Length: 106
Image 1 (cartoon, helix red, strand yellow):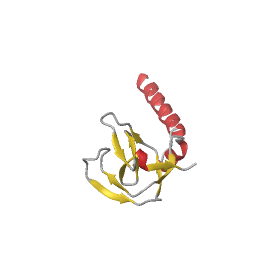
Image 2 (spheres, helix red, strand yellow; image 1 turned 180 degrees about the horizontal axis):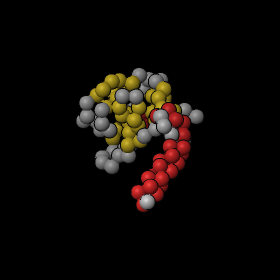
Image 3 (spheres, one colour; image 1 turned 90 degrees about the vertical axis):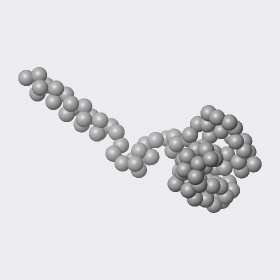
C-alpha cells in the first residue's frame, strides 16, 4: 500500500511541475523577463569564456542585435573595452562579449 501512495505522489508532483515549468528554450526565454535585447556598439571579439585570455570564437559586427539572457558577473580585475571600463560579460550567440560593448534596446 505505501508503494502505491508514493507512486501517486510522485506522479502528481511530476504532472504539476510539467504544467508549471516551460518545456522549450523559446518558452523559457519568453517566460524569463530577465532577457534583454542589445545591439553591439562596435566590432568586438566573441570569446569562448568570459575573459580576454580565452579563445576567440567569432567577431560580432557593429550593429548586430542579440538577446542576452545571461550575464557573467566579473569578480576579477576591471577591463577596458569599447572605450569603457567594466567587469561583466554578456552571453550572446556563440560566446561572451564585454557588457560595455553592448547597448540595451529600449
